[in-house]
Length: 244
Image (cartoon, rainbow, N blue to C red):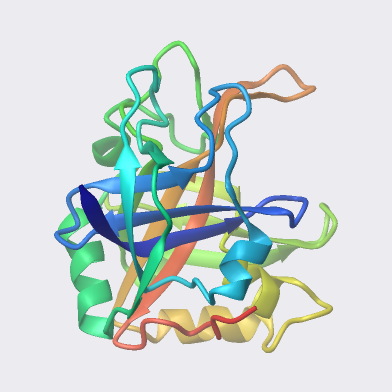
């Protein structure tokens, strides 16, 4: 059966060959991450070149046939195999985009992932994996701080405080558009401070919060690492120019 999704996550890897794309069904009730292969050890994502050629951006409506495998394990239960060509159905309106985010949103990470996450944690340990790997977190815009990490290759990171008061600090921002247009000094169109000021002026902020594949750090920490996949504000839903 063909299914429509509205792209909500377009996230970068350290190498630009692949992009991790995910979207919500039009009712906001199901998240789908299309993959070219479902090998659990090395899933094949859509390529950067494919997305660029077809101008696939957050808010793009895609239609495709997806196969749901039996062997997908938590938390990456959104993984689905593409069994047809992707059809581009055009861009969602600002209202459509907000509606899918609003329909899917939670106000705390605990509510979204369904497991206890210690205040200040940067990962979820593998012995208690959550049921999903991507959530929509709605918080007050002033509870989101974005800054340049001068101690880590000047990468742009975020502090996030959810409705429970729990704070999650130094989270990597993997949102492709945010990185290219704000985070990357070579391609940025505005400064990090100006972006933060504009975000804080908005009425609503929705964050797509994702979990990496399991990764063991050299310092001994092991698990699913928390990252910011998408940053969307309203009434101006895209303060970042979304382009390649």
